Length: 79
Image (cartoon, rainbow, N blue to C red; front, side, top):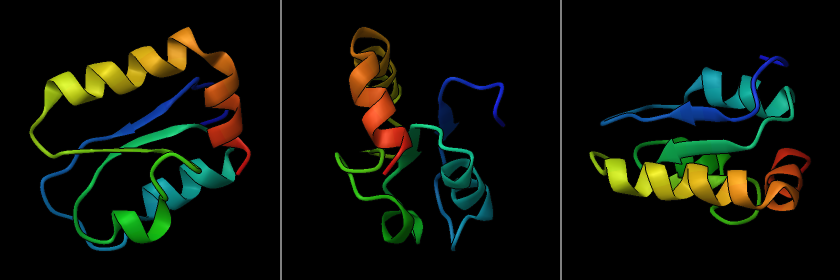
């Protein structure tokens, strides 16, 4: 995971996703769907970005925000 710049976890339905927890431990900025138990792990705008499920435009916007603002990505990665 340390080789990644961002961690993207699009999902339609989820319990408590260990992969998202592991990405957090790897200090990656996380973009994930706002479904199931994901909002219990990621606080939108504080330690990651939550997007609506089935919304590729929201994913694109979140990725663009991190690419255009590396400090934001770094802040989300170390929270």
